[in-house]
Amino acid sequence: MTLHRRPTPPKQLREAVAQALPALPTAWQPLAGGRVNRLWRAGDTVIKLYDPNGESPLFPNDPQAEAHALAWLAPFGIAPTLQATGTDWLAYQYQPGSPWRGTPQMVAAALTRLHQLPPPPQAQFRLAANGSAKILGQARAIGALCQATLPPAPPDPGVPAGLVCMIHGDAVPGNLIAHQDQITFIDWQCPALGDPADDIATFLSPAMQWLYRGQPLNADETSAFLAACPPRVADRYRNLKSLYHWRMAAHCLWKAEQGDPDYAKAMHLELAAL
Image (cartoon, rainbow, N blue to C red; front, side, top):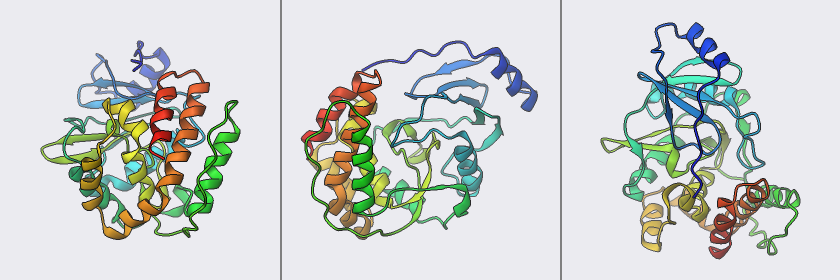
């Protein structure tokens, strides 16, 4: 898989961050992990610079939304502490640990905790596609942006819009930092009010697991994860999973056509799951 280089932080960024956080150390170390935006660590602070072309039709890349999410989540201890924001950057408290490589049940517990938080202010967050008709429509719209064509879409199972809660929107392994048996969610650039099954679908996605962890989850791991989720949410995911796989395949095709070759294999993994 492609490794993304982390160039020296731009002078303008350094100056803006120094003005907002004058006590910050001047030595910045690049951080690996993100596939879109650039990250550095200075002392106990992470500085994130957003790629202006980093948005995709499925995954927004919105610094204001991330700032809103971190501010709202601060009392709950499941996201980093926001320290400063700028037009195209933000700084937050460094979270010790490493990207998740543990048990799927650990992730199920963390997502359940997130999804059971009280709802945030609706005006600050987008509404994610909810219900099979909206998911299918979004998937077809992404596919229509591509030059190549996907296999026919699965039939609409007729699942109505359901639960609405705070969702991460990009719950891939690289955004789940494990430390002392706890998970902290990072990279909140595409939060939403949506169906908790959406986060489950992203985590279980064969494409996302391969891109961030090197291999999809096996059948036992998937079953263990779903068994640890609330039954209503797990059943909802099962009823929608064919559409989620097809939508992710459309996303991967779009990314591959934008010049990221990793996503070509990721697309085939997603289609195989159908």
